[in-house]
Length: 469
Image 1 (cartoon, one colour):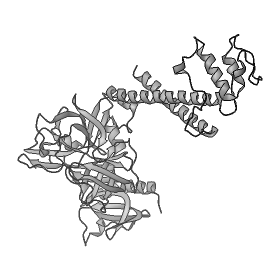
Image 2 (cartoon, rainbow, N blue to C red; image 1 turned 180 degrees about the horizontal axis):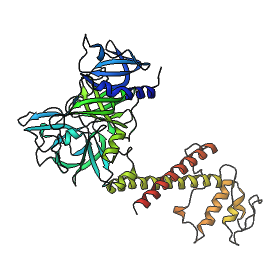
Image 3 (cartoon, rainbow, N blue to C red; image 1 turned 30 degrees about the horizontal axis):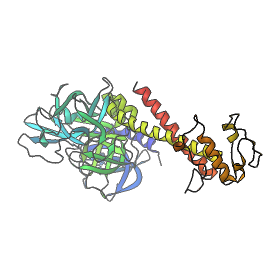
């Protein structure tokens, strides 16, 4: 059986011939469908407006082409934009979003031939020319026809969905492309408008990746909302009618999506044009522009980025917030990091103190380590081998540990330069009174954890301090 790459090569060799035949709407490489059920067999698939019981021999699709299995699918592709007369009623998602993001209703401010149009904002992207945030959608959503111009204003929601001009305008066309691979447009974002690198009901946009056969995908569109499907075809060449002034266009190397009917009846419908199609991780694989019943077609995202000269960020980070000028968020995060850093620092100090105190105090046994090193006054001689009657301490120091401590307390009280009585530690009991003694392993584990947190917090603080100047 030929590989997918070999099947694509065969398909590309014969596609012009088949697309020229009457009633053929597309040709691709994808899963063969038998009795309405998708199989695991990969075939060269010829798409037609309608299957017929009788077809002239010259137009029949053979069972194999150069050794590759074939299939015939009934698919009549249409642009998935809503076109309504000016006296329309609102439908689908009519929300006026305070934050511009993927999956929401948009459309041109201008009316074309007495009609207004509605589609979907795919995602917030970066315009590589200006470095500024922008919105991506389809050519046929933002530009619509051959009468478009750079600077044509756009509204959110669309005028079909109660958007008003100029009150709901958010930006204008920067570039628009209708080529053999891409049906796309880039829209500027007006100053003061808030944006997010997210898609409604999906979450954060996480970069891009190529579509692969069988890949599970999702999209969120203005009309059908959040839907699920899978990639059932690659290298699709599809014929689509763009209407008066533009006519029929053939787009090649497109991505075909089959609906997951267990989760939703359709993957897309009119008004969903411009949505981005993402995988399970939020990576964009295609830009939705057309459909046929339960099947949808999207431009491969690599072609969209290249021809529109835009970029889709991968996820979100503190560094990205800083680059976006969102220092208010960073300051809040920095404050929290500083608090954690201080807590970790204090914990480390306390841990070290406790550990050192445990070393210094050997309870019930008996001796106080290094008292000789503490009391070096010549009038307080001390002999660690003396049983209690050593010079300078009097006979009262020979009655055991309690008596020795009492004598020591008295001597401490006479030292004006030493600790005052109310601040003096009680040396007759453990620093860990009413608590179980920590084992060596427990102390080591606490110390390691504290040091790890301190190191991480210090590194994060240093990075933030450097970035914030």
